Image 1 (cartoon, protein in one colour):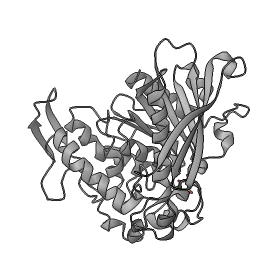
Image 2 (cartoon, rainbow, N blue to C red):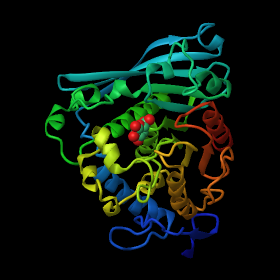
Image 3 (cartoon, protein in one colour):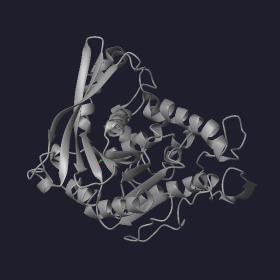
Image 4 (cartoon, rainbow, N blue to C red):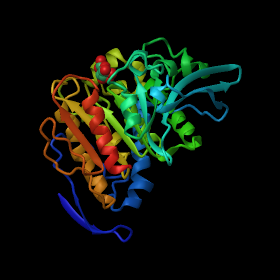
Length: 389
Ligand code: GTR
């Protein structure tokens, strides 16, 4: 289907190309009252909030009412000098404390900011869902999962937080970390109560709060990055917090960047069998009934428009399913066209090692296994150099 309409507020007589719907996924463009979205304003004012609501209710859950939570943030340590990245960066350790009645919880993150910058720099927030050695603030252990030295030398600031400090990544009845603040919800969880992924996304927003206060970081140019369960979280963080200019998701697959209907590899049943606590209870309704979901994962990625989104996959990651991951981008592409923007530069899936960097939707597919490594990071930074610098 191709339809044309004229938008006064953007540059062009836009052509919106709706891709073939081979997997029978719900339309991004038809609102719940049956009317069609015809402009970028309509998307932002009507359809986007509906999509967000569906994802909260059916898949990821909602944030609790946080109006009685007092959140304070402080820099508890600041170091620079030869021992911190050979004198190239300052390291700030930030503690975020949340207090509700007599309950509180703290998590921390470390920020590196290049010292030679003449003006505020763009920045990355890494959601570190792996062991702390993958984002070691002391930089004793270096990992390509978070190449902070390279990020600094390319003129960016970066921060990483450890998901397990925010909310545990195992089933423990929602008792520790963030969950400590809301015992009444842990005891009697509504079917649309927050899962763990959305709480990790909340933590990414707290890092953004710090960036807004930090004079040497340009908070308008921040990318949130994550891999696998962290990649599901980075898309969710970008969807929920429009302060992020870019969301980068590595190998996020099921319940992340891959269309669920017709997907190979991991299913909704399999993810919920191992990680039920990542999601709202309502998601269980769709085990074995994926065709009845009033959404699919293109809903999640579409929420980034008109901001930037980048996904990457690996040839051997059959569990995540690269073809279904790319299908999501094809389906989201027309949302960018609605804004008069180029989404995907091509709708054929690229060969491995042929990154797509031109449009607002970036993507690469690399030879290898389920991982986020230095090749991926080089691509992410090439893309941000081009679109954010
Ligand atoms: C897997 C899970 C995937 C992905 C992965 C990871 O076991 O089934 O959805 O999140 O973990 O985070 O590495």
